Image 1: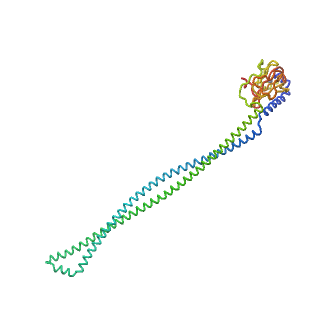
Image 2: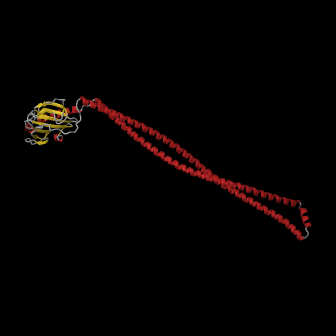
Image 3: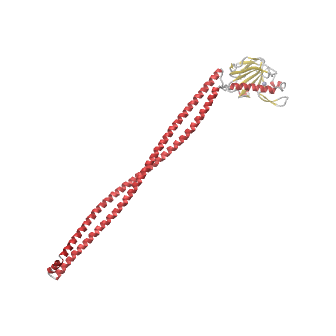
Length: 409
Ligand SMILES: [Zn+2]
């Protein structure tokens, strides 16, 4: 009545049967899980290509954004440099204005000194002229004058006085001339000094003006550079906008391809009349009238062969003809007879999850039927490799047997 007991009988053919069973199950699973049209595969290829292109665009966009940031930094540093240059220029212009003030003052001094010089020169010339006149007069009247002076002297003392007087006049003239000459010479020296000072100021002004001109040129160059940077930045911003638009277009392309794939999958699912997804719900107990678990899932030591044997499902001993229920909603993918499984049913629950029911005495469903959880699909029996009425219940997930207990709440 339990599988273990008749294992002995079929010990030679069991591995072969097991392989056949697994192959049958897997072949069925593969054909079901691979319901994908060429059109979906083609679209998925296009999605992948569009994604690659989008990634390339994104990476190019990142590069351009970095370039734009760099340009903006350069522009900002140029602008602050120009601000500093403008400050320098303002200082230089201040210096020029100060120098201009000094030059104007110096020119005024020079003008005044020139007037002084003119006056001093005139005075000197007048003195010289007066002196020359007196000397000339004295010489012209030389003999007479001296004679007259001598003769007209009332006394020797008077004569001496008169001669002294002449001497005094001459000395006075001489002294005055000397004095005026010295004044004129002094004024001339002053004027020369002022000229020299003005020359220094003129040179300083010329130097500062040269500095101003080169600074203004530098500022103008930098401003040209800033304009060029701004042009570059604008170009980069335009490129960024273009890349962003391209990426947006790629996103839309990907979204529309994905929508088309989803639509097609839905259509295929509808054509197949079933949902392809398992929602994770717990199974109902497939043989509610069972009396005991005659063999559990897992490795078992074979009672006589002394080797470990894997039991891929649970055996539920139950009365002959008692109901076998669908453990969960799904589509019957097999309802047939095999030498080892007897009458068996296999149900696809979606997402590569299948349940298998073996050794039935009768089957109530056919391949392609949709069944609901708890719906009767067969009756307990002892067909195939079985010694007594029981249900062998197995669960396959992603092509391998798993413990049914994981799904039995
Ligand atoms: Zn079994």
